[in-house]
Length: 220
Length: 220
Image (cartoon, rainbow over all chains, first blue to last red; front, side, top):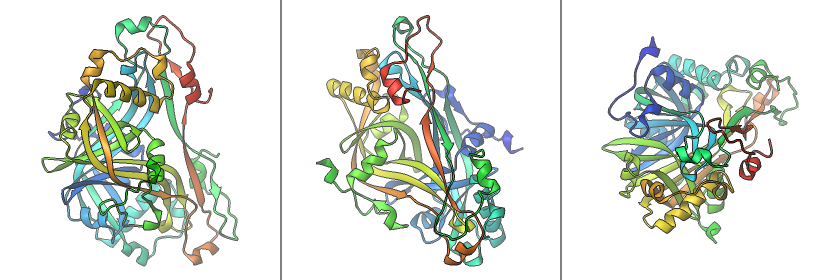
């Protein structure tokens, strides 16, 4: 049902190369779900700030977390307008002309406001979602969060009011005459992959790599 | 000489986990130079916006480019306060406790204002630097930018007034008692690499992969 939402608005409308813009929830969510770190931008005393934050999505809500004592938590918890941005670079587009060099990318900008999650039960559910959003299945394998840890950690719920995705795919688009030039053109893909897990050496106990990590790295 | 600069200021001071903060130009530049896309945040009519932009660095200046007609070019060219953020995720830190899961990262936040680069000769030099910042050596291989193309492209010079880098490396830091638990902990590295170049098929001419691209992908 959530996939039917459309996040287009005046402020989320993409001006440049609008054919690359998408506003449907399915596309916006697919880019958000392909990452877990976003830049959260907000204004404070006339100055634009931005801080990278981990996020986990549930429907139209992005959960952010941080120490309750942190400036960003306390600032965003007041419900000021903010935006969260994510950009994934998929390749370098090599053109015949200097001018038409480009990159392939998937980006999202979300607009909304944050509210603190106060209910302890809801917080616990969010912690689980958070951990499993980055390493699916990890929550069940590790020592659970205790009351003291849960208390000092703040969770912010950023409800997506409106948003846009912008996506470029494919090869270079050169000027017609330039296709006759003997100059190589194409795409250099950029790939992000998980490497071989490295066990922490600060314990006397050696363990097998658990299922969650094995699955994450495809049994590397 | 530029490496001796220090970008610490009231607004660039990192509050949370200050031991991970760096303000020396060498560290700030090394993170900026490891990427070429940043999120540029600014405030417009009470709303924080952010847009991903390509950048190339020269000393204390980050050059951004875009169409002169674009909203972001026209807005930033007025010299309003802005910030540019870059975050590179190097690995997932898997702890014995849910609470101590983390990520290894290198991030930078730059504060400053943009000014348009008007001088055609300076613009041309920046275009060259820009192209070669992403694909070293490419400028000399491709059809040069012509006067019309140079005219429609705007270059903004964002002078770094102050900045911070924040870097986390290493394994998990768990509670003392948790080191006795039979739970795997460690780091899953995240690696970004170039894939095999794919030639554009929209020309009758087939060319060898040029030196710049071969070097970029390490002869893949």
